[in-house]
Image 1 (cartoon, rainbow, N blue to C red):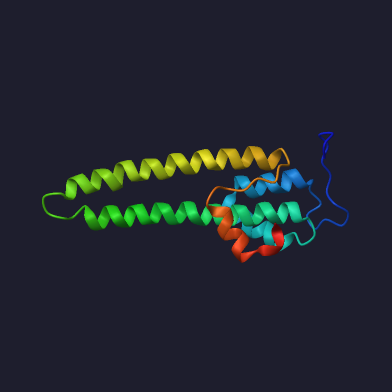
Image 2 (spheres, rainbow, N blue to C red):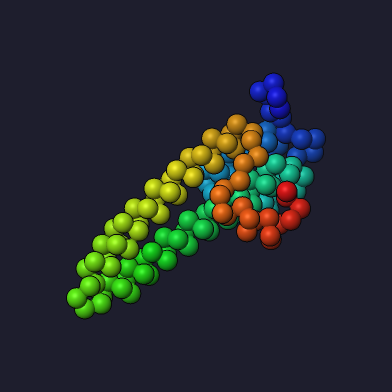
Length: 134
């Protein structure tokens, strides 16, 4: 892969070049990761990105849901509810959205370039549940 050309490994289940399949996992993080993890059994690079995409998509969705729940719970407190609503509802959602989009774009670029990159904090969880993809 050093010369810039990518090919699918012999007998690849998808028939796609490894970087394209990995890039599709990164673009359609949660759903694409699940689909490629179920389809691709031979290409470990694609399976690596499928696992990364599943955990990234799950973490992004989970963080968004958590911020929404905190905003709803603490936003109804008398007196300080508006402060908590602004903190969690506006600033929290913006931070989760910005961090998620930045990591998503970095992941897409790395996957299409054929690099074996891991999302910060999330990949440790992926390695815990999928130790064969190191």
